[in-house]
Length: 275
Ligand code: KIV
Image 1 (cartoon, protein in one colour):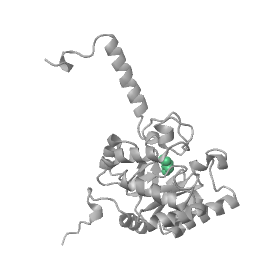
Image 2: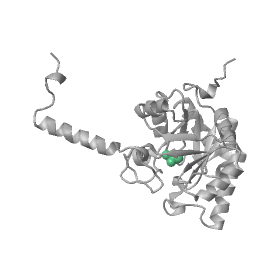
Image 3: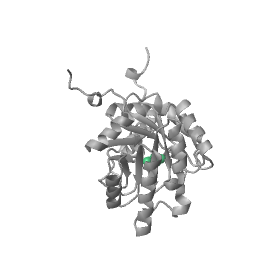
Image 4: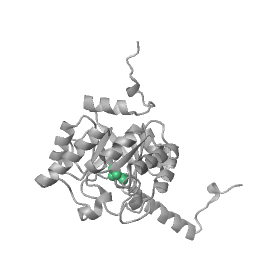
């Protein structure tokens, strides 16, 4: 009998049971945002476990100051593009502001559209105790839910900016209660954003679902980054980001060389012309 498990084969789709097993075994999980087919293919082939069509597309794709104006139609459009490049990764669509807060019925309807029209395998939404019922209802409709607590960008006006959460005893208790509430409501994983590393460690220890950290230190079960930060395509990155490439500089260099060669009549040359 073969000792090769489904999990160890490259092409096998990442599923919820696989992620749960990773948590139990202490094997880390990788997640990146993606917004189009090209990068979906690259990240999927590179072995990234989860691709998130984040509402961060409002910032990095649309050039907006906040994620608040992003629409459900826009998330579905980008999810559809990403889904065409996904073979192995689990594909999660981010429910944007206004698509799940109005009523649980709206929340389920929005999640259903992400799956039916976008090809998502599950959805993510921000908030803790306040959205626990919405999570319950979406999960009851057989749609996996990833939760998101701590620094939740859709609450930018309540938080007074993108501020680290859970630094005071009261704030700490609130983030911990939110994380427990989303687990109890049936979320399969939870993003911990912008919280002290020791609090993320305490939450990770106390939950049975995987925690995915962004600006939450080393103790999480996995890590997530916005692809533009990872690749050096952002104007500005927070201090917790590690930039793994500088594609911004390479793209700028290539565009400058192209402009120069066009203006000097060096491109196209013989080699790059049809005969
Ligand atoms: O929208 C997004 O990209 C996110 C990640 C930062 C987790 O929510």
